[in-house]
Amino acid sequence: MNGQARKPRPAPAQGSAPEAGFLAAIYARPGFKLRRAHQIALSVFAEECRSLEVTSTQYGILVAVSERPGLDQVGVAQALGLDRSTTGMVVGLLEGRGLLRRDRHATDGRRRVLSLTEEGARLLEALAPAAERARRRLLAPLSAEEARTLTALLDRLMDHHDALVRVPLMRPER
Amino acid sequence: MNGQARKPRPAPAQGSAPEAGFLAAIYARPGFKLRRAHQIALSVFAEECRSLEVTSTQYGILVAVSERPGLDQVGVAQALGLDRSTTGMVVGLLEGRGLLRRDRHATDGRRRVLSLTEEGARLLEALAPAAERARRRLLAPLSAEEARTLTALLDRLMDHHDALVRVPLMRPER
DNA sequence: TCAAGATCGTCAGACGACTGATTAAATTTG
DNA sequence: CAAATTTAATCAGTCGTCTGACGATCTTGA
Image 1 (cartoon, each protein chain N blue to C red):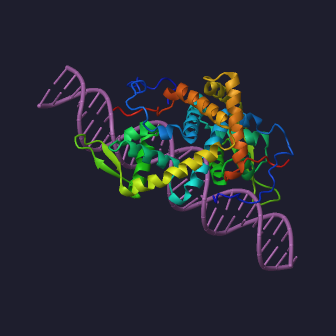
Image 2 (cartoon, protein in one colour):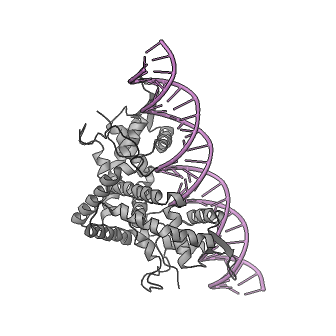
Image 3 (cartoon, each protein chain N blue to C red):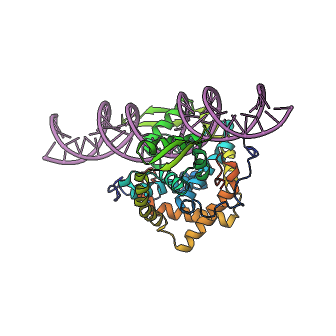
């Protein structure tokens, strides 16, 4: 929460090994490690951007809209691998905060065309260094070489399973 | 959803490279890759356990209670790195399905002591092979060596940042 | 002993995510 | 052209997760 060590905790029972194999079946699961690592990444990002009140998902949406003003919600969802419903919800949130606009498409009445407001653009600028700090901090325990390896392995997982996830990554046409 | 290829999708705009650098700033973020990989891990687990109606979080809780009958909710939360509230919610769900019991602690009136029901134990047995299939499928694109590397790198991230996350991993005493 | 502090469970509120259904607006086709 | 199909957005419902607050209970130290 506060970015510093949270509290003098009563010494995690790590070393004392009260029972070596407890939950080994869970701790060994890659899915568990990924959940944990993701949890950590969210925490670090949240800490670095605390003052700006933006989550990593919101940051992704802001960047996408900034790079492609006029993108619709489906385009954003596909580019980021988000669910359509989730996207609609978060976009509504950002609209409510005055960070982006949601206009009707000129010729296709179904589409909602997204673009940053002045304030959204300003916030995004302030966000960039914070996001960079978060990236660095997350990767701090790894060497540059190791970070590249991790990145490559995760990319392999993503490529291989892309079609299996309900929301595959897809770039907007044009 | 259905475990098969979901639909003949209209050819992801991958190769055609409509704009090489679109969202590169996001795609390069390790946090983004971790979110995606976690999303995939959840999907694979869900597919393998679809018939049993159990999520990976629920599976973790069932295993923890099975290995330590009599553990309380805080113990479960700390062992799995879950929030107390989350744990209470999921435990309530499992209790509602008759998979575990929640009794008052004999001497400490604050504690709720957890244990598997017959049905919970049976389900857990049926779950083991499904969880193993999920693990294998998730790691399918990696060699054994690469899987070990990935595991090791994620462990490094976890160890280094453990204290920063609000819910550090902690084994129950005794 | 008793008041202060710590701990367990729970609630409300917020956010992200997925499913399934519905509505409205294209687009395709017979 | 009109009907059938497809697609964008939204909604309701479920689940997981975290935060902050609260009441009940336990422990401790003055």
